[in-house]
Image (cartoon, rainbow, N blue to C red):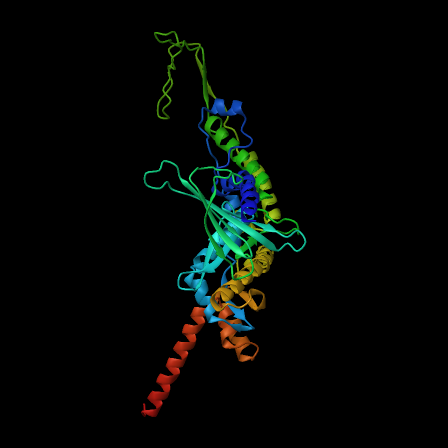
Length: 441
């Protein structure tokens, strides 16, 4: 069965390589100039090779900044052990990377397994190397594949390809010495086969999907790609116009133009701004063309930017559209209402994936059935607030008895480790105060 998984999912990885490369190019700002004709490229003599506006990356970054995991609840109570697993696996740093990959490429993956010490080991994976198969009835993950290429071994000219298939009962490692070997080839040899005691595939997809059957997810800036191309086109035209027409051009008539030894005309006038054009011929005339106004390009750029605001819910002050910035925290929150709603939707979607990761981590370390573990993830508030406003609201809720102090600290953005340190510091301060009072101080 594992070889069938290797063949089917390996072919799936190959099919997704091209669309992922396109999304990567837009995220990096290296996409080709879509509206620049070959004739224009020739006329420009290669002076405009790349124009990047960074809108796709901005769309993703503004959401990632609002997706911050602060802790886990197990059976309704904060679980310090899960948070230790989280930080031990560097997920406090890698979770934003997983969110960025999922928002950029449509999906990312998390693999959970046991380290040499028996503790849960969690790794974040790219959709360029990992893919999964799902049950068409339940949409549950039934198998997964990770495939990558390692540098050539000493004494070997070809790099080595590795692959791992994950199934509910077994995990199989493959290798081949031929780079680019098709997944269906018999050149893949089995390196190791181990039993999977979890009973489920230990690979969790983080899918950025809004449709039920969108199993591979959709890039967050899919709707922005055509608008980005249009914006780049306008900016390219603006650059070309500023180079050739925005600067005043001078003309002259009645002037004899000399030629060089090859018979080619030679410009008799200097191009320096501080030089004067002089001609001894009485019929000579000089003049200057009017410079081209670039305001039309500015108006076109604003139209495209307004469309980007509409499809992304990004506030105008984030995109630099308009000259007025919000003057207060309330105005900022009002302008970011759409963006906050999108971030909360992503928290709900990605939260289910991180809860599955937490269940697998508990199962790895305690040997229980992952399905029996009750875990929920806690997120930082995605809204923009001032420190004073957040602190004032938290104090009022604690004083009214609505929230305990630990929950108020979590809402202020404190992680589970931060809350533990605060509790310990308060306990030590209380013990010190008691000792000082007992000593008569």
